[in-house]
Amino acid sequence: MRRHPRSLPEVLGSGERSISFEFFPAKDEAGDRRLWTALRRVEPVAPAFVSVTYGAGGSSRDQTISTTERIVAGTTLRLVAHLTAVGHSVTDLRAIVRRYADAGIRDVLALRGDPPGDPQGAWHPHPRGVRYAAELVELIKGWGAFTVGVAAFPEGHPRSPDRESDLRHFVAKCRAGADYAVTQMFFRAEDYLRLRDRVAAAGCTTPIIPEIMPATHFEQIRKFARLSSATLPSALAEQLERARDDAAASHRIGVEHATGLAEVLLREGAPGLHFITLNRPAASLDIYRALGLDQQPVRTAPPEELGGVPVSARRGERLEECG
Image 1 (cartoon, one colour):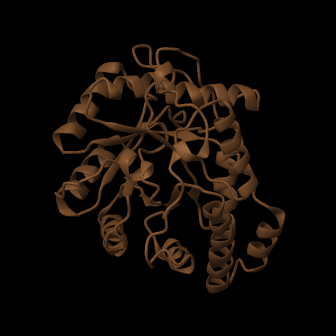
Image 2: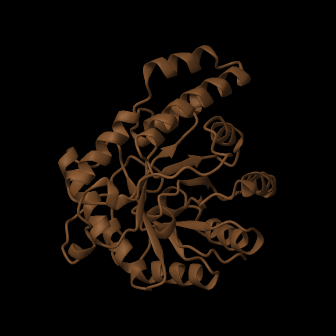
């Protein structure tokens, strides 16, 4: 296990771009081999962190916990463990956080989570759990030694009635102690930029890392966009549909679109990029190289240089939130 000299807030606060990759826990032996091959492929990149998802409705809880423990023990990578509130009592959540701590994990992505079975169904809190992600942030922060990230939604949380409500929800998580945020997938730069500007106008300086999902498979990306309520641009969808039987062409289309999107985001001052790999990082690494990120690091402006008033002094205030 490697000890990292700087925390994630310190990395983000320095202006150094945070490049990271997301994986999911394997369900069988073949999947486990694919996961570890993927991890070894990104390890030489020395990403700011890698994350491991928790599964819809907490369905992969045990696999997530054991996978994170193995990654921490067997690689040099900083591990951000996902944790969702859905289906868990406060006692359950504390036990999971304790297990993460015992494994040497100090970074958690706190999410309310999707309902089990139907991600777009009605959400019901555990009777002895937490209702909002802000409460989960507070619970984790209560341990004192954790860096906590939260979700942000460039097109608005699917359950928020409007953008103003969604903004209040996000700021509430930051006031609860969130150190940074990672967005939901999106395909249009303007959606991220509008979110960034709304958050800054609200006086919140929490760094928001955009999530990049390479669209390299037509049916897959259409399904993911529907489940996440992300707008898939018609031009991109049409290109992918025409190339649906040509894997190489689909890969090229997805990489080119994501590279163009990432170029705009970085030029506009995004603090980094978080790549969804689906345990197959080839497209993400192609984008990484196309952006020239394998060359010397490029700095972005620290949050305080982008304007806004820190929310840390107002963390005692509470607003109900959705995501």
